[in-house]
Image 1: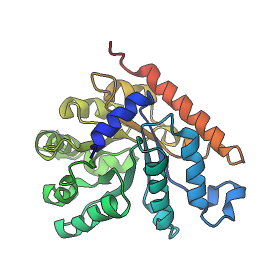
Image 2 (image 1 turned 90 degrees about the horizontal axis):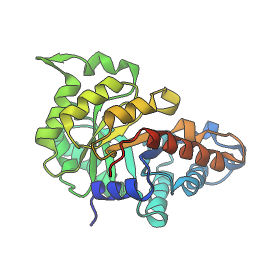
Image 3 (image 1 turned 60 degrees about the horizontal axis):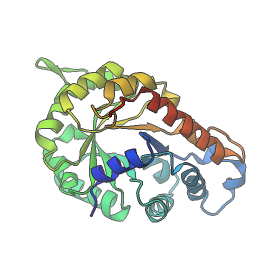
Image 4 (image 1 turned 90 degrees about the vertical axis):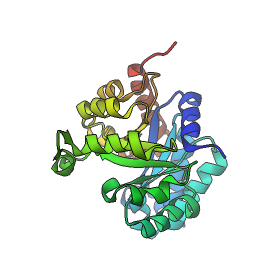
Length: 275
Protein backbone atom coordinates (compact mmCIF):
# COMPACT_ATOMS: atom_id res chain seq x y z
CA UNK A 1 0.00 0.00 0.00
CA UNK A 2 1.33 3.44 -0.95
CA UNK A 3 2.02 5.67 2.03
CA UNK A 4 0.33 9.04 2.38
CA UNK A 5 3.63 10.95 2.26
CA UNK A 6 4.68 9.13 -0.91
CA UNK A 7 1.29 9.76 -2.50
CA UNK A 8 1.52 13.43 -1.54
CA UNK A 9 5.02 13.76 -2.98
CA UNK A 10 3.86 12.27 -6.25
CA UNK A 11 0.87 14.63 -6.36
CA UNK A 12 3.14 17.64 -5.76
CA UNK A 13 5.17 16.66 -8.79
CA UNK A 14 2.45 15.33 -11.09
CA UNK A 15 0.30 18.47 -10.89
CA UNK A 16 3.19 20.86 -10.17
CA UNK A 17 1.08 22.05 -7.27
CA UNK A 18 1.16 22.68 -3.53
CA UNK A 19 -2.53 23.64 -3.51
CA UNK A 20 -5.08 21.86 -1.33
CA UNK A 21 -8.76 22.64 -1.83
CA UNK A 22 -10.70 22.62 1.42
CA UNK A 23 -14.10 21.03 0.87
CA UNK A 24 -16.01 23.01 3.53
CA UNK A 25 -19.55 23.26 2.16
CA UNK A 26 -22.17 25.59 3.62
CA UNK A 27 -25.64 24.77 2.37
CA UNK A 28 -26.68 28.40 2.71
CA UNK A 29 -24.02 29.38 0.16
CA UNK A 30 -24.56 26.67 -2.43
CA UNK A 31 -25.66 27.82 -5.90
CA UNK A 32 -29.44 27.91 -6.31
CA UNK A 33 -29.57 25.06 -8.76
CA UNK A 34 -28.13 22.62 -6.23
CA UNK A 35 -30.20 23.49 -3.19
CA UNK A 36 -33.13 21.26 -4.12
CA UNK A 37 -31.12 18.18 -5.08
CA UNK A 38 -31.18 15.04 -2.98
CA UNK A 39 -27.47 15.26 -2.09
CA UNK A 40 -26.57 18.92 -2.66
CA UNK A 41 -23.29 18.85 -0.74
CA UNK A 42 -22.00 15.84 -2.65
CA UNK A 43 -23.07 17.30 -5.99
CA UNK A 44 -21.36 20.60 -5.14
CA UNK A 45 -18.17 18.82 -4.05
CA UNK A 46 -18.18 16.60 -7.14
CA UNK A 47 -18.36 19.62 -9.45
CA UNK A 48 -15.52 21.36 -7.58
CA UNK A 49 -13.38 18.21 -7.62
CA UNK A 50 -13.92 17.56 -11.33
CA UNK A 51 -13.01 21.18 -12.11
CA UNK A 52 -9.78 21.24 -10.08
CA UNK A 53 -8.35 17.70 -9.91
CA UNK A 54 -5.43 18.43 -12.24
CA UNK A 55 -4.44 21.54 -10.25
CA UNK A 56 -4.16 20.26 -6.68
CA UNK A 57 -2.03 18.05 -4.45
CA UNK A 58 -4.82 17.18 -1.99
CA UNK A 59 -8.41 17.72 -0.93
CA UNK A 60 -9.38 18.50 2.66
CA UNK A 61 -13.00 18.04 3.75
CA UNK A 62 -13.71 19.60 7.16
CA UNK A 63 -15.74 17.20 9.29
CA UNK A 64 -17.94 19.77 11.05
CA UNK A 65 -19.26 21.08 7.74
CA UNK A 66 -20.88 17.69 7.19
CA UNK A 67 -21.85 16.69 10.72
CA UNK A 68 -23.66 20.00 11.28
CA UNK A 69 -26.03 19.13 8.42
CA UNK A 70 -26.30 15.41 9.31
CA UNK A 71 -24.51 14.86 6.01
CA UNK A 72 -21.85 12.35 7.03
CA UNK A 73 -23.08 10.10 4.22
CA UNK A 74 -22.21 12.84 1.72
CA UNK A 75 -18.74 13.10 3.27
CA UNK A 76 -18.28 9.36 2.76
CA UNK A 77 -19.48 9.66 -0.84
CA UNK A 78 -17.14 12.59 -1.46
CA UNK A 79 -14.06 10.71 -0.23
CA UNK A 80 -15.08 7.56 -2.09
CA UNK A 81 -15.57 9.60 -5.26
CA UNK A 82 -12.08 11.12 -5.05
CA UNK A 83 -10.48 7.74 -4.42
CA UNK A 84 -12.36 6.11 -7.28
CA UNK A 85 -12.08 8.87 -9.87
CA UNK A 86 -8.79 10.57 -8.94
CA UNK A 87 -6.91 7.91 -6.95
CA UNK A 88 -3.58 9.75 -7.13
CA UNK A 89 -4.90 12.67 -5.03
CA UNK A 90 -4.83 12.14 -1.26
CA UNK A 91 -7.71 13.14 1.01
CA UNK A 92 -7.10 14.83 4.36
CA UNK A 93 -9.96 14.59 6.85
CA UNK A 94 -9.82 17.80 8.86
CA UNK A 95 -11.28 16.62 12.18
CA UNK A 96 -8.71 17.85 14.77
CA UNK A 97 -9.27 14.80 16.95
CA UNK A 98 -7.61 14.43 20.35
CA UNK A 99 -8.64 12.27 23.30
CA UNK A 100 -7.39 9.58 25.67
CA UNK A 101 -5.99 6.46 24.04
CA UNK A 102 -9.07 4.24 24.07
CA UNK A 103 -11.24 6.96 22.54
CA UNK A 104 -8.49 8.00 20.14
CA UNK A 105 -8.54 4.43 18.82
CA UNK A 106 -12.20 4.90 17.89
CA UNK A 107 -11.44 8.24 16.23
CA UNK A 108 -8.63 6.62 14.22
CA UNK A 109 -10.95 3.87 13.07
CA UNK A 110 -13.53 6.51 12.13
CA UNK A 111 -11.06 8.54 10.04
CA UNK A 112 -9.11 5.76 8.38
CA UNK A 113 -11.54 2.84 8.19
CA UNK A 114 -15.03 4.34 8.12
CA UNK A 115 -14.25 7.36 5.97
CA UNK A 116 -11.15 5.97 4.27
CA UNK A 117 -9.19 9.21 4.63
CA UNK A 118 -5.52 9.19 3.70
CA UNK A 119 -4.66 11.57 6.55
CA UNK A 120 -6.34 13.24 9.50
CA UNK A 121 -5.67 16.35 11.57
CA UNK A 122 -5.14 15.79 15.29
CA UNK A 123 -4.69 17.85 18.45
CA UNK A 124 -1.51 17.10 20.44
CA UNK A 125 -2.74 18.54 23.76
CA UNK A 126 -3.13 15.09 25.37
CA UNK A 127 0.37 13.97 24.37
CA UNK A 128 1.97 11.07 22.59
CA UNK A 129 -0.16 8.21 23.94
CA UNK A 130 -3.28 9.92 22.52
CA UNK A 131 -1.59 10.23 19.13
CA UNK A 132 -0.29 6.66 18.96
CA UNK A 133 -3.61 5.13 17.81
CA UNK A 134 -3.35 7.35 14.72
CA UNK A 135 0.41 7.04 14.25
CA UNK A 136 0.30 3.24 14.20
CA UNK A 137 -1.49 3.43 10.83
CA UNK A 138 1.91 3.69 9.15
CA UNK A 139 0.58 4.34 5.64
CA UNK A 140 -1.72 7.13 6.80
CA UNK A 141 -0.82 10.76 7.48
CA UNK A 142 -1.14 12.27 10.96
CA UNK A 143 -1.24 16.05 10.75
CA UNK A 144 -0.56 17.63 14.13
CA UNK A 145 -1.70 21.10 15.14
CA UNK A 146 1.32 23.29 15.85
CA UNK A 147 0.79 26.98 15.03
CA UNK A 148 -2.76 27.51 13.89
CA UNK A 149 -3.94 30.38 11.70
CA UNK A 150 -6.53 31.97 14.01
CA UNK A 151 -5.79 35.19 15.95
CA UNK A 152 -6.40 33.55 19.34
CA UNK A 153 -3.64 31.01 18.70
CA UNK A 154 -1.31 33.28 20.65
CA UNK A 155 -3.28 32.70 23.87
CA UNK A 156 -1.86 29.19 24.27
CA UNK A 157 0.62 28.48 21.51
CA UNK A 158 2.84 31.46 22.39
CA UNK A 159 3.11 30.56 26.08
CA UNK A 160 6.68 30.05 27.27
CA UNK A 161 7.87 26.55 28.12
CA UNK A 162 11.26 27.20 29.62
CA UNK A 163 13.14 29.07 26.90
CA UNK A 164 10.74 27.97 24.17
CA UNK A 165 7.16 28.62 23.15
CA UNK A 166 4.54 25.88 23.08
CA UNK A 167 4.57 25.67 19.27
CA UNK A 168 8.36 25.20 19.32
CA UNK A 169 7.92 22.32 21.78
CA UNK A 170 5.29 20.66 19.56
CA UNK A 171 7.54 20.94 16.50
CA UNK A 172 10.43 19.39 18.44
CA UNK A 173 8.27 16.52 19.71
CA UNK A 174 7.19 15.73 16.16
CA UNK A 175 10.70 15.95 14.73
CA UNK A 176 12.41 13.99 17.51
CA UNK A 177 9.84 11.57 18.96
CA UNK A 178 6.51 11.23 17.21
CA UNK A 179 7.60 10.92 13.58
CA UNK A 180 9.43 7.61 13.93
CA UNK A 181 7.26 6.09 11.19
CA UNK A 182 7.71 9.07 8.85
CA UNK A 183 3.97 9.76 8.64
CA UNK A 184 3.67 13.10 10.47
CA UNK A 185 2.91 16.58 9.23
CA UNK A 186 2.41 19.86 11.10
CA UNK A 187 -0.35 22.47 10.82
CA UNK A 188 1.28 25.90 10.54
CA UNK A 189 -0.82 28.89 9.52
CA UNK A 190 0.11 31.23 6.69
CA UNK A 191 -1.02 34.12 8.89
CA UNK A 192 2.18 33.72 10.94
CA UNK A 193 5.05 33.77 8.41
CA UNK A 194 7.84 34.31 10.96
CA UNK A 195 6.65 31.31 12.95
CA UNK A 196 6.61 29.29 9.73
CA UNK A 197 10.34 29.95 9.35
CA UNK A 198 11.04 29.08 12.99
CA UNK A 199 9.13 25.81 12.77
CA UNK A 200 10.78 24.85 9.50
CA UNK A 201 14.15 25.30 11.20
CA UNK A 202 13.09 22.92 13.98
CA UNK A 203 11.14 20.36 11.96
CA UNK A 204 13.52 19.81 9.05
CA UNK A 205 11.73 18.26 6.08
CA UNK A 206 8.47 17.40 7.89
CA UNK A 207 5.68 18.61 5.55
CA UNK A 208 3.36 21.41 6.64
CA UNK A 209 -0.36 21.80 6.11
CA UNK A 210 -0.74 25.57 5.72
CA UNK A 211 -4.21 27.09 6.17
CA UNK A 212 -4.86 30.81 6.30
CA UNK A 213 -4.47 31.98 2.69
CA UNK A 214 -7.44 33.32 0.77
CA UNK A 215 -10.26 34.46 3.05
CA UNK A 216 -8.00 34.61 6.14
CA UNK A 217 -5.53 36.91 4.39
CA UNK A 218 -2.24 35.05 4.80
CA UNK A 219 0.56 36.21 2.50
CA UNK A 220 1.19 33.43 -0.02
CA UNK A 221 4.69 34.53 -1.06
CA UNK A 222 5.89 34.81 2.54
CA UNK A 223 4.35 31.48 3.46
CA UNK A 224 6.12 29.75 0.59
CA UNK A 225 9.43 31.51 1.17
CA UNK A 226 9.48 30.70 4.89
CA UNK A 227 7.88 27.27 4.84
CA UNK A 228 9.18 25.42 1.79
CA UNK A 229 11.79 22.70 2.06
CA UNK A 230 15.10 22.79 0.24
CA UNK A 231 13.59 21.10 -2.81
CA UNK A 232 10.78 23.67 -3.14
CA UNK A 233 8.15 21.30 -1.79
CA UNK A 234 7.10 20.43 1.76
CA UNK A 235 3.88 22.48 1.81
CA UNK A 236 0.19 21.74 1.41
CA UNK A 237 -1.35 25.19 1.13
CA UNK A 238 -5.07 25.03 1.78
CA UNK A 239 -7.75 27.40 0.56
CA UNK A 240 -11.46 26.81 1.04
CA UNK A 241 -13.89 29.72 0.82
CA UNK A 242 -11.91 31.71 -1.76
CA UNK A 243 -12.14 28.74 -4.13
CA UNK A 244 -15.50 27.18 -3.26
CA UNK A 245 -17.38 30.46 -3.43
CA UNK A 246 -15.44 32.22 -6.17
CA UNK A 247 -18.86 32.48 -7.82
CA UNK A 248 -22.35 31.93 -6.45
CA UNK A 249 -23.82 31.41 -9.91
CA UNK A 250 -24.06 28.47 -12.30
CA UNK A 251 -20.42 29.05 -13.28
CA UNK A 252 -19.23 28.18 -9.73
CA UNK A 253 -17.12 25.22 -10.88
CA UNK A 254 -15.28 27.12 -13.61
CA UNK A 255 -14.76 30.02 -11.21
CA UNK A 256 -13.33 27.58 -8.65
CA UNK A 257 -10.97 26.25 -11.30
CA UNK A 258 -9.79 29.74 -12.17
CA UNK A 259 -9.21 30.58 -8.48
CA UNK A 260 -7.30 27.32 -7.94
CA UNK A 261 -5.16 27.90 -11.00
CA UNK A 262 -4.37 31.45 -9.91
CA UNK A 263 -3.34 30.27 -6.45
CA UNK A 264 -1.15 27.53 -7.90
CA UNK A 265 0.58 30.08 -10.14
CA UNK A 266 1.05 32.48 -7.23
CA UNK A 267 2.60 29.72 -5.10
CA UNK A 268 4.83 28.43 -7.89
CA UNK A 269 6.18 31.92 -8.55
CA UNK A 270 7.68 31.87 -5.04
CA UNK A 271 8.92 28.29 -4.94
CA UNK A 272 12.59 27.45 -4.83
CA UNK A 273 13.72 26.09 -8.18
CA UNK A 274 15.75 22.89 -7.89
CA UNK A 275 17.90 21.84 -10.83
